[in-house]
Length: 541
Image 1 (cartoon, helix red, strand yellow):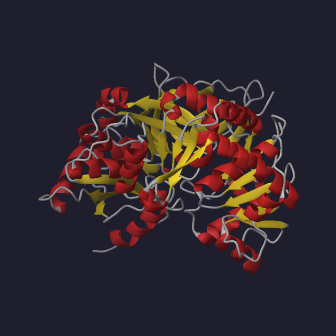
Image 2: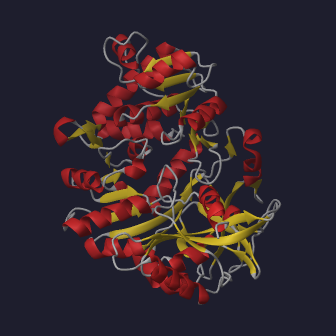
Image 3: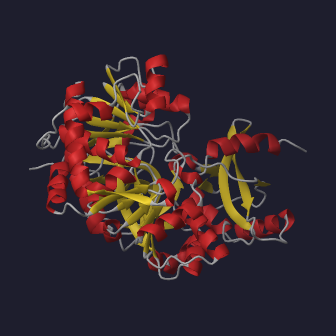
């Protein structure tokens, strides 16, 4: 069977004038990469990489923010049997260095600064044998990809690597633990594309996406992907006006982004009265979608359908739910029953396994309604981490099913309801012990975020005398005036009094100016950091 990349390039050849990528250009405009241009650039890149000594199976770290170079290099490497390695550019530099050391790439394709750092201080690993600067100026002293492209004869086509060969290594964001290199096989790429196109039809529309993988994911899905004018290393800090510009200038139909980014867009449109007439769908990734954010979107963009998508770097997408069904389930979430993530998408199976212990091959899963650890299996579930021995507990995240399939334990707590929908209770690692039993973040926080004056709330466990004790930390809504801390604290305590999750009546309630969040999505609360912040404040008289 032909690989996904060769199929995509074949389709591109049949429809050469269609645009596959829009990207920021000088003067506030958006440039366009047609399918014909993408094929030509990919074939010349393949020949250049071959001249540079990059071979099938070689790991190649791709370190560039240029959306065209990112897309072309990743797709081309996959299509030649080499293995692109992608590390989140929003990670702190020491963490990025550790990720690259773990990946041990054979080659690095990096923009000039990364190329220079690699040659001077070994950035990318001392074992790197080939370094090519991407997007370097004409007079750049070292080897450059552009220079090699001009020196070679383009290849006639790409190869079809075996289905079980490694196609891609993507490092997790580090939002729920140390970043891990996730291995994806060639067979999985086709399954991922099928899951997006069959399970999330809006993904095929002209889409604005404010995160780095958009550049190569769009072409693989056969859509036109628009990369906004932003620093791909800091997508969570994108200005709402940049998203508006991207939608309006490209007539985009779909927007991909985290809940934090969606919230920023909705606040901007509400405040400025901005309309986005072509926008019809929002796909929200990276964290659960708060009802307050959904309300703001519905208030200013009433014709837009909002889809909350659940998944992980190890398996994306897993499930989805649109705003109509989500709104109907609001009373259950407000009553502390968790957040609904929708039904599993085609090609993926979700079970609930007993937490904190292996389930064993072929374990059927816990009965519906029982809370445990969400476990995912299917054609696009990653079979392994790059180096399980180096990631400690991550090695236990993979089990085998009854038919030998890989079962990925997500580390998320939840249950399945009578309709097969997934309900999320929070990360297992973020459970907090209490007198009445364990407290789960996604059973408590949505209840508190419905309180007037609360923008976000976090339940964290703070160590004291050798034990963990629950603490609630609140970030106030800045756009609401007239509500002081005393009033907000009173509202929080009243909400907790009616919350069935077992939060103690005397739980400390602290206020934080802006809850710390992850670098990639700006939506997942950094609970370890927040607990360290809270600890000394609890000791004050």
